[in-house]
Each structure stands twice: as structure tokens, then as C-alpha cells.
Length: 367
Image (tube, rainbow, N blue to C red; front, side):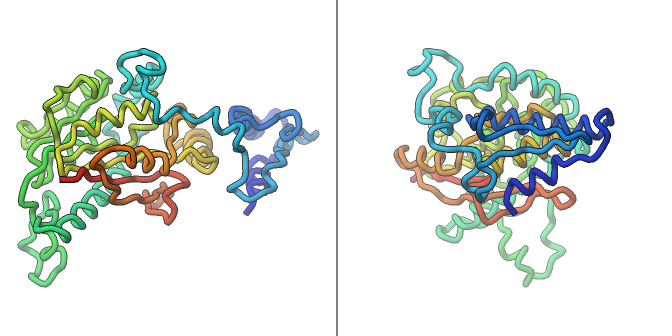
């Protein structure tokens, strides 16, 4: 379906002008109009709003007559949205603390702190995504053991004795021969860090974040499980302030890069913390019109799946940009990349295209 047809369906409205339904339609129309103006589409020639007597707002955007791949962005306007991914913050602006999120981002997460562990609250999608994160890491670590002498991954909190010897879950789920030290960057309230700390193949998990309110939530929640006391540690510290000699076997950056002002600087510091043979797992969002439509317009404004202001379109990073960045880094190899999306009523699922919406990537440092 062409987007012109899709938008006309979404925004068409036959309600009276003063009705709440009509006002809501107008709000969504202006939200999309703001995006079109942000991306540089000419509002004078390509975009106009038309309010009929019965208040039927519609968009008339000539570019939408083309397929999805040609809408909104063109080469002259896209450049204004792209952050200089390969430029360092200090070189361009002479500022410190380049790996931290902006003050606006910090305020936003502070407001979410109290409900971070509410699985039915604003972070419910993040809780559901954690399952996909663990699947992605386990699958890649199993691939490693198939190519080396290492053993596969044993799931946490599961007794395999009750399974028959022929069950593949028992034959394939063997603990890794060497335990891994994990660094969870941008750990937030600790959803991923707690899960990682309960795995039998992790020796320790360090979660770092710059939001004191969110970190306090993580610390208090971890106290409910005595088994985490000696294995899970939270620190309020910037990535670049970690000791130089402190290294890890696995570094995770899930749903972090789209909140960082200078991602290239951030990534360089993160890679410096990985031991030879170690891993980097990350996830973020492609900077495409489809991503804006699904993660901001639909998720934030239409269905209210996440709080408004959670995402900033200009901070999204395309999958190929991450690949290009790692290609410039010595001793790093690409391992895996998968697209994913949230389906209401079903949860997170894998998609066949890692260059349209959300995606996860895995990289390994050479021994």
C-alpha cells in the first residue's frame, strides 16, 4: 500500500469539528506535519492541510505518491538530520562528557524511574524486549561454541534433570567452560543486568548509568534477590571515566545509542573496554521514515505504547552506519544483525529486514 493511501485512511475524519475525536485527529495530523517540516520537505509546494466543512483533515504530499523507499527524504535534506557519526565530540565542539545522554533525555528517564519495574507500565515493551535480547545473545554464543571447543549456553534457573537425555534442550544446553564478565552500559533500572547476573555463565555484571534516580531503582530492586548481592554491581559513572585497565568479556548497549549525543565517541570508549575474544551486543533504531512512523507516531502518539518524548528521530542510526564504523576499528569482526519489531498482542518478533526499524547487532573482538 502506498503511504498516501495509508495516511488518508488514518487522518480522514467525519466527526464534527468540535468533537474530541476530531481534535485528536488534528493532533496527529500536526504531529506528522511537524516531521515533514523537520525533514525538509517543502510545505509550500508539496504539503498543505485541507479542512473540509465537516472537518476532514487530509495530507496532500506529492512525494507520498511514490513507493515507501522514496518518501520524505532526499539527498539535499537528509544530511541535515544525520549526526556526524564518525566525528568526535571533543574535536568538533571541545566538550567533555561526550558519552552521556543530553539533559532532556536524563529528565525524561527520571520521570520513568518509579515505574521502571512495572511490567504493565510505561516500560512494559522494554520488559518484553528483554526476552529477544537474551535469545539474540544466546544464539550467537552458541554459534561460537560450534566453531570452537567451548560449550554451549545453559539457561538460567532451569533444571535439566527432568528432561530426557534425547531432548535437544538438554544436549545443547551446557554451561560455558569459562565464565564471562559483563558490562551493561546504560543499564537503566537493571532489567537486562539482573537477568544477566542470574545466568550461570557470568562471573559478574556491572551496570553503569548516569541517572541517579533510575540507578537507585535498580539497586533497590536487586536487593530483593540475595543471590545477586556478590554478582551484580551498579555504578553511576560515565563510560569514559571507567578505569583504563578495567576490561570485560561482554559489553552490551541495548537501546542506548539513540539517546547519545555523540555515538561515535561513545562507541570508541565502549570498544576499548572489551577483552580480546570478547563481544559487543547492541540494539538501536534505523533512521528511516518507517521507523519514525512506527516508533514515534504510532508507538508514542497514536497507541501510547511508550511515553511521548522517548525517541528523537534525528538521533536514530542506520544499521549500515554501525557496520561502517566497526569496519574502521582494528581487530573487530561482524557476527550477526537482525531486524525486530513490536507487534501489539504478540510481543517482539524478528523481521527479515534489519535496515528498516529496530535492529540488534553482534560484533566480536579478535583473539
